[in-house]
Length: 177
Image (cartoon, rainbow, N blue to C red; front, side, top):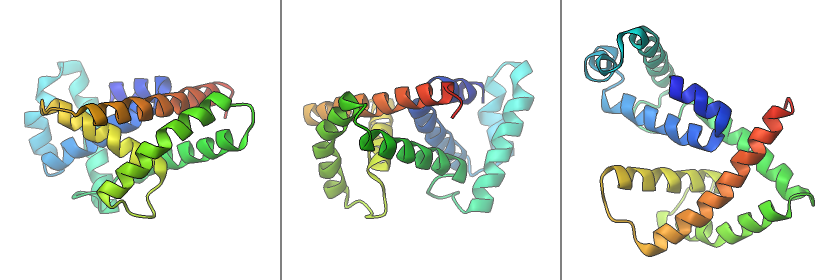
């Protein structure tokens, strides 16, 4: 919970990936607050446990209510992605952000390739494809699995693009957006 608050303020892209990881953590524990309390919350300092348990409990309730206990993402996380998509469209439409546009077009070939390989849902946005790639590589790293040179290159290019989007988000948020 504390990590999420800090990431949301500092780096919206890392926040979204973190929240997807939290969703998976909750799924792995069956969205069962008793299991989470015993296996996860109990590892935290005493003074953080009540707030963390409440946060996990609320997220579990939301996941059940929204029907995403097996797969998918919470509406709060989908809303962040939608806001990022809106900002992306604004940045692309502006002539004031040539480096952002260049980073997007550099990443586009990797995005297209990832979508083709995955047979990506046509309704899935390019940004969602990027975040899925970043999250997928995070999972591979956590599992200590090898990441190919091609995947690493794609990840670096996509990461640069998403990093620029996150910086633009932070700049916009700082201006009271």
